Length: 113
Image (cartoon, rainbow, N blue to C red; front, top):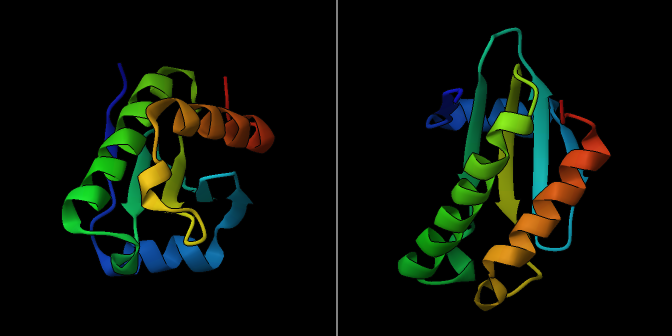
């Protein structure tokens, strides 16, 4: 099982959001940038206006768990930022919807092994 680091600093998020490639799904948006390391880094950002803290944290846990399940299939050397779409209500967050969305986006990107 490979270890994935998390992005924590604001400048790390900004670098990926400005220089990374953008892919969109039905519920989540993904910005991805290649790095020259043997590890993946992920960050999850959900806007404050979308819901209360417990709702935003719930969505973050769903995204993190779906990524953890797919982690073995993903090539290493990427920095990935997941954003929840502003037009989609946070109440529509469902484990299986996010899983399907993430699979479709990663197939579109072509980062599966």
